Length: 172
Image 1 (cartoon, rainbow, N blue to C red):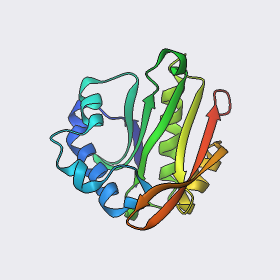
Image 2 (tube, rainbow, N blue to C red):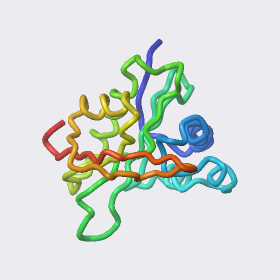
Image 3 (cartoon, rainbow, N blue to C red):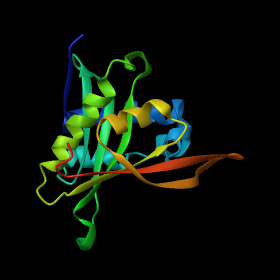
């Protein structure tokens, strides 16, 4: 199995939609978006960014041959005073590929791509505390906790705390 990593291109937008909806459906506790709302949209926000090759908002993909098996997104802050900050979002690797180091490699590839933007000085992310494997990957990638948002997500009567993490340029 040879896994490759690259930024998604316009022809990948349909495959992106499929894997994005899969992660929302299979792991609703780990993401802020809701599957049933997203699946009814004619186009997800990042489908448009992918199709337009937006420099400030992109998705990196992990591929087994030509099959998209994992995603990791980057969104740059749009306001002038915060354009030096980017956020890592939508990190997901298909279950049958988990535990093989793909998530960490995917995250590292997306980090490097984000830091190619010369103005980006820091990357932030939020991760559900109970998502142990994701927490380990983010720590291995150099992210450090700077805060904890208690009861960040709510699904039904259950709450999920979110760990806030940051990585500064030069800490790759």
